[in-house]
Amino acid sequence: MWKCSVCNFIFEGEDAPDKCPKCGAPKEKYSRLEEAAEQKIAGARENNHLLMTSIDLLDELEAIGERGTEINLDPWCLGYFTKLKEQAKLLKQTSLAEIEVHVKKDKWG
Image (tube, rainbow, N blue to C red; front, side):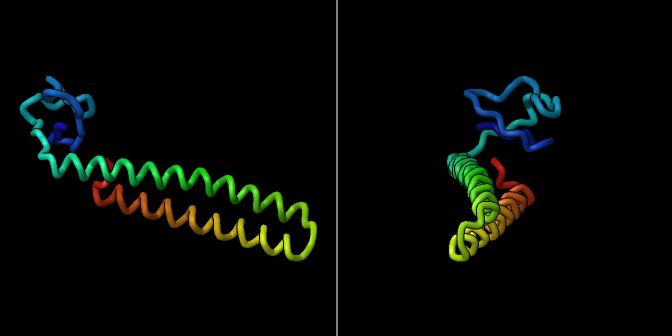
């Protein structure tokens, strides 16, 4: 992996590109990342992918909760689906907040 010192673009390849695809900086502005930095980026990418996948699943659970409350079969089911909807929404907001923290700390990868 190579990192542009101008815009922090990460390029994956055997050699740095002749010109940065993001900002147009010349090849000389790239530096090769050390193995530890590459591993951190790989971990951040996987972690953020897991967060995004969980958000998609939580969207589905929130919709299930919504539909269950619309059906309103009985008080127990209504309580369950209401709680499912609320908890899914809260966990989704928490996941989005964590992704925002990663972006601000340059842990997006």
